[in-house]
Image 1 (tube, protein in one colour):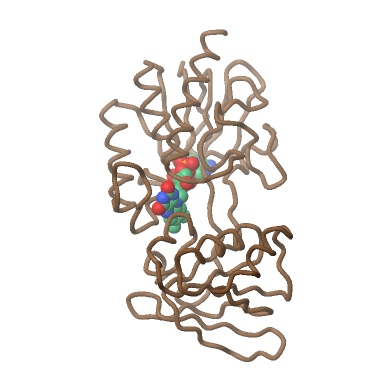
Image 2 (image 1 turned 180 degrees about the vertical axis):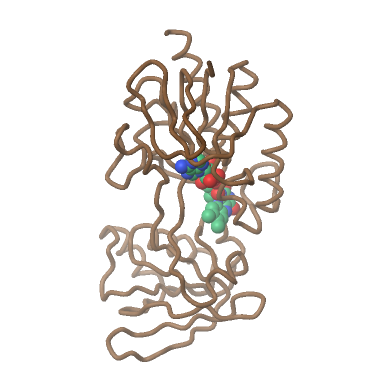
Length: 303
Ligand SMILES: Cc1cc2nc3c(=O)[nH]c(=O)nc-3n(C[C@H](O)[C@H](O)[C@H](O)COP(=O)(O)OP(=O)(O)OC[C@H]3O[C@@H](n4cnc5c(N)ncnc54)[C@H](O)[C@@H]3O)c2cc1C
């Protein structure tokens, strides 16, 4: 019988695996991708992970995966579809069969919504970004745009305006959805220009972003805005669909847990981007993985 199943081999799951192996827990990671590392593989450069400035996302994921390999933790390639958490033995239902363990850590992460416009995928990491906290520093003294009108978009724009020479906020309505206090902060910044009632049509550039084209919804006029960075902030979704009928989540689907990872279901823990938290980054995900294993150990000792 396994002591622990970890769902997801992103930074949170891989960090949990290292701590679990060192705690001598009999552990399996279940990961749907053929390559381990999670979202961080999608980023060109990670410049805010302490001790490894400027490391590429791919290299950081490889280092994390190699670290786990050194401890011999098995990774099963399968997609988790459902859970049965009713008994002391937790069942994890996948497209490759059912796995059982005494405890489960859910570290299935989150996914940033894409718009699917021309140039977006091609220039991702070359000026198109989904994370201002991660990539904002690369646009110091340059012009950038934020696409979106909710809290994340407005927070991103305020953050970017501290370093960028100018920030355009492209929003499809004539008023923002963000909290009033954030709107007030944004609208008084001298280097922010609102582009109201407009949709992003394309991101343009050969090897890196050189401009964006937006379409005004009211008169269908098109405008090309020269800039270097296009931050798409139209939403982020937790990958928790398989868990939602079995565990408490907030209204957006994030599993409710603090930094201990403890959820409302005994023996089931949540770590990384999939849980309710303030900051979704590698540094917080790896901390969560370590903390969740400490909680697993306590839980198993008390059983
Ligand atoms: C473009 C981009 C750039 C970023 N840049 C930075 C940066 O510079 N610095 C920084 O600190 N953070 C950055 N981030 C954020 C960082 O990548 C995340 O905070 C971090 O990866 C979260 O780790 P996680 O392990 O919680 O989740 P994830 O990285 O999302 O990993 C979750 C894993 O679970 C797997 N999984 C999901 N569902 C299932 C299922 N049903 N069955 C099996 N497996 C499943 C996924 O395939 C994935 O491998 C960036 C994110 C993006 C998208």
